[in-house]
Structures are given as C-alpha cells and as structure tokens.
Image (cartoon, rainbow, N blue to C red; front, side, top):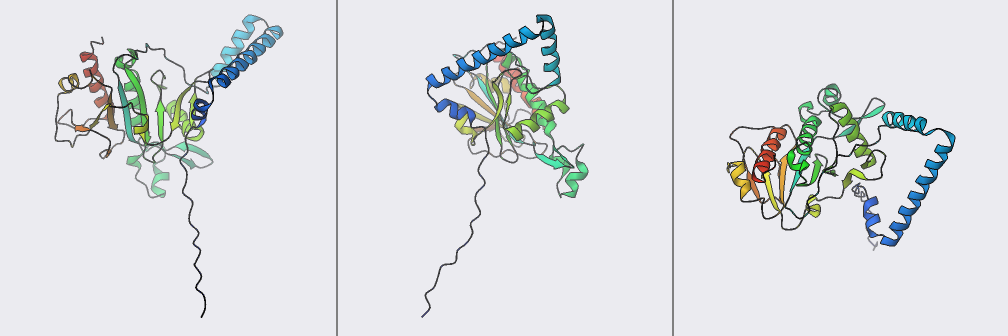
Length: 295
C-alpha cells in the first residue's frame, strides 16, 4: 500500500502595512540616548555654520540660504498656534479619501479625474471617483478655521480608499494650490512622512491602522451622513457634547457614497440637503466657534 503524502501548497505571503516607524522606534529608546543624539546634532549644526561663516560674509550667506530654501521645496512651513491642553478639543477624521498614486507614462502621479481620465478609463476605472481635490478643500477648511487658531484642534487623520492612514499636525500650513498639494501627497505616500522646512519635525506621516488606536480614551465619535434619519441643529447639538470630553468628527472625503465605520457612536445629518465635505466642516467649525466663544 502506498503511503499518502500531503500536498504542499505555496501560501501567498500577506502584504505588510507600510507606515512610518521611525518615531515609534525613537519613543522606545531611552531618554539618555535621545539627549545624546540631540547634542550631537547641535554640534554638527554649529560646525557647519562656523565653516560657512569663514568662507563668505554674513550677508552673502543669508542671501544664499534664502535662495536655496526657495529652490528646494522639501518641506511644509509651520504655523504657530496656542496649545491649550487642559481644555477639551476636537479631532477630525476624513474617511475614503481619493489619494491614489500610479505610474502614468514614466513618472508617478496622484490620480485625478481631470488629468488622468483617459488613463483611468483604459484601466477600467470610473474617473468620477478620483477626486483628491475634496481632501485638499477639507484640510484647508479645518486648518484655517478659528477653532484651530485657538488651539482647540487636537489632530487630523486621513484614511484613503486603499486603507492608508496618515496624520496631519494641526500647525501645518497646507499648500494653497492643488498642484503643490498633489506634490506633497505624492511625496507623503511614497516616503511615508513629510518634514518641516529646515527642521526634523514630521508634520505629516503615515501611521499604523486602525485610527481608533490613535484617538483619546472616552472620546465622543460623531459621524456625518446625508442619509442619516437624525437631523440636528449643529450648534444646539454640540453644546451638549463638546464641553465635557474630546469629540471626534468623522466625515467622508469622497464624491459619492456613505462612510461605514463600526467605531462611530452616533450618525447625524446637519442639513436636509446633501453638502460637500468642505461646507459641512465649515458649519461644524462655525458651531464650535459660537459655543466656545471663539471670535
């Protein structure tokens, strides 16, 4: 009798999630090592400054540094805001953001319905679903709001349609034009982080899923959808919610559809008409400013 042998099956390896692990590793290091590294960086910076000062005059150095900073746009400028950690704040989560990178021709580009309609149709995709400008408008509305200027915005998280989650610091100044915004998003999704101009601080970085692992404990999570049966007055609704604990607002950053998240405590609608993500955020921030007396 022939002995049966098991058939070996080549199991496909699961693709691991890519995110920025540098800050996680730095947090695990002892504080002593971090201080030593910081001292070494300061020493190196001083050596570079002194060597440049010996070669050229101070005025010529300043002009050269400004010209180099303008030519090498590798970071995002920082906007200083007052941090009020003892007060309750808000967190915005943008779900289903259309931020997908693909190789078009010889270069990698951020796909959008205007510039890549033919490319998307050839690959059997609907160009109407590729709207990264929605995320751009939503981020501008959040970060330019008086709520953020007053220091009540704790964090902003964006989760793409492909499941990539990244964090945007509240003091970031997002580029005003879409072309520059697309370049920043392309760099973020490829390099997993964006640093401040001339500094090592990471203003935007891809982080590990799920988003609930980055939210504060005991926070109230409110989702927004036009299809919700609970139609509320935003100002009256927030007056009973945002004064005791931190509040998380979850919105969709896509052109069509509904967000489906299992961690949301309550789904509400703030208008009897469908609204864009940017205008919905503006109504939320206006209600928050009124309740918190932010002028």
